Image (cartoon, rainbow, N blue to C red; front, side, top):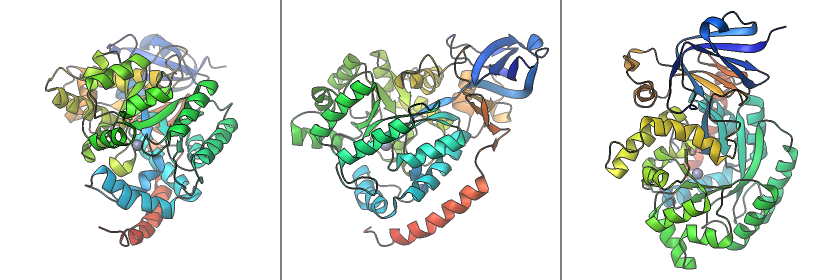
Length: 443
Ligand SMILES: [Zn+2]
């Protein structure tokens, strides 16, 4: 009987732990969905395994952890572009969601998104959208790891009449996936402007009781902060503190409009910041002060946000932008180095999920969630510094292999659990209906 399920032979291993090292001449053995051993290549080739996979020209690293997405919005990719956040939401996104959101829409959009996510290096997805039951089924079928932060919102949607029904449906979903090894369920209250204080307090209590994460859009724009101050007298983060929502289970998404006191607040409570650089740039929302947050000891992880405000779902592309705009934000080329971005997409993502003992690095015993990135192209040569190559020289499309819990999901650039032709057909069917509806919306 084979000692290992699979042994991978890449040119480079970027394990993330030990920190900031690149290994050569090392093979990685997988067994039972976990990383079983790091072996000298010469010895690994003599080991018995069900499969030896050659990865010439590839860097093997932990799968990327995408902390914020609205998968089903992949069907709204390019639907309403070049608009400010509130115009984009109120005139286009919300009326369209009102008209179209259904289990079928969410399943097709989630499948489309997961294909894109896998090809961009994501192996763990945190998703927040209506009918999370369907995204959970899509994630289950595709093999990706996922936290569904089920949406909680005060207004009626096709999924739930009000915030309390959102919570009831979300908790029922949590029960259903209680013993699933890849899928977990947490709370996704939209924001302090779409969810009442009473509901936010209830979520704080439930999250603690159930030890379940909370993900919330926070300080996305200056207008959001001003609006909440006008209504409540408190900045959104102070309101969350008062309601007991801020803590180490809380993931604060965006956080562009921050003063020093806001940074102190998030650091004090050990809450996590989820930086979505491309979405922030596209919506002109602002730029999260990532280096300043990290310097204050705040854990910052990365997300793509939905394809409607990105429009890609490539985490490899996202970490490049994170480094580039981090420098611009701080007017300092040393800010948000290549290694810092790689850490945000792996170790910090795992920490934000409370899964640092399972995910985020290539260490024996951790889940076999891995990606291989082809760095053999002329645009990657020469490779003086592999972290620099991975972050600054890639175009986002170099992910050629992906494994989650040891299962191969991308093999030599091809998706193994999703059919791209079928996905394209389903997307086209929706786009015809969506385009007709868009013509009825006010410009
Ligand atoms: Zn979002």
